[in-house]
Length: 392
Image (cartoon, rainbow, N blue to C red):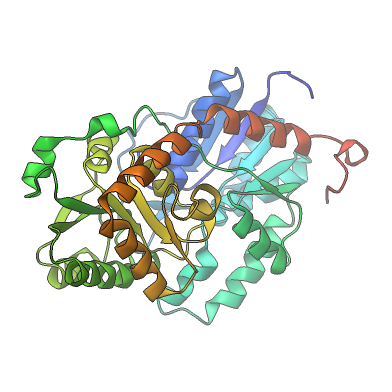
């Protein structure tokens, strides 16, 4: 495949320094592509934290609306004419559209008018979120929209095999895999901090039960509370404390339910790495993830991860070897898996060592290289595509 330098336009409603899995992934991909010599133009909504400076050749900021339930984030407005003018003047070789809102849709329409190939990414299960926020009737409508959006692109990248199977079942076409990586030098057991554990009220032999993520309804946090309370009752001989890193609309309710838990708020960079490494067991009850970057981060930090057997956990955890898995929706199975992990100190130690060893092999460079290959593949005429893949 060609090694020529590419001009790539990447369209997203979210990007670093915003804190979420999509922003983190896109930041890694953009840095990786630029490190490989490609030109990447970022198209995104202007956020409240952005300086009021003129747009650059490699960043185009558009107007946005506040996104309900996500303070500080903007939902990008349709900007088709602005994009047409920019891309007629400087035509990208290929687009990557990471989010399916009005901005992404206008980018798709502009690209089709200019006959620029488009790759899309399925980063967020919005069609599942609707039920958690009281809009269950919208699920079918939203699924129909997302299917139509992605099936108009040359290729849709999905992060896990379980996600691919689910979308194929719903009629999504031209799906390809692009997994996620982890910075195993940042997320490292060596970042463990006795001082931080002391702030949490824990000694060397106590167990910090950690959760990192957005504190919101779609994350199945009722099971997090239920699991910790069950562990506390099952293991009275062990000193356990629940540590929650992150923020969101359910924080106040959780603080009332779990008065003994430690709420650390949002953490970034080295501070986040220290919080991970200072934990022992990581509970991840979410059922709505396309991937779940925090699973890989927790594995890299050497934690005993308990999760449902889907998305990142299904790809990276072997039950009993480097973590613990439960069948999706089986709440008691999830609690039992966590209890089994905590009950045997030697087994937990071995699982944590294996977790670190596995995650240390999941770097970003190979994923960025595969991403580049997918972008180049989308640029090929239909007769040159690999067997089994078609363009619209």
